[in-house]
Image 1 (tube, helix red, strand yellow):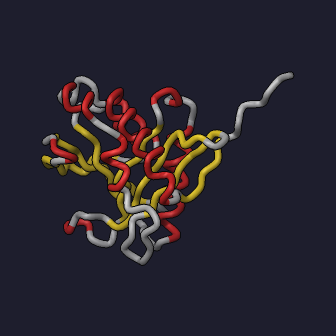
Image 2 (cartoon, one colour):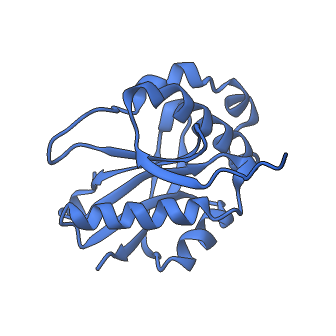
Length: 175
């Protein structure tokens, strides 16, 4: 008997998805940021300690929204987005996180997540959006560049989860 591979589907994340999303997030960091962030830090990442950070199930005009891409029942990627945190681009949307589980890199799932995220930001009346990329993450810069995102010249240090990193901002018109 031959089985057909599951078709990817995108849906809103549910609160009960938090641990699975955290697993994708941690594995993506451990593979994608190896050599850019301290290995001991990456090796110590624990999905169970991050699962409560996503704010899934929040609502309201300023709320973050998270979508997931699934293959069958498995979550293999996610995107979290909402209003920008940056006062110099007030009124823009922001993609806070977009990650695909490393075994699924190159399969087009990130592209589908990105397209759906842009569409959802537009439905929330955002016409421009920003996102931040870790300096040295050439793979991400190529990925976003292929979708029309451009560096806007802004860089800053961030402290995500206890490690200081340098990030670069990208912008894109959504309409």
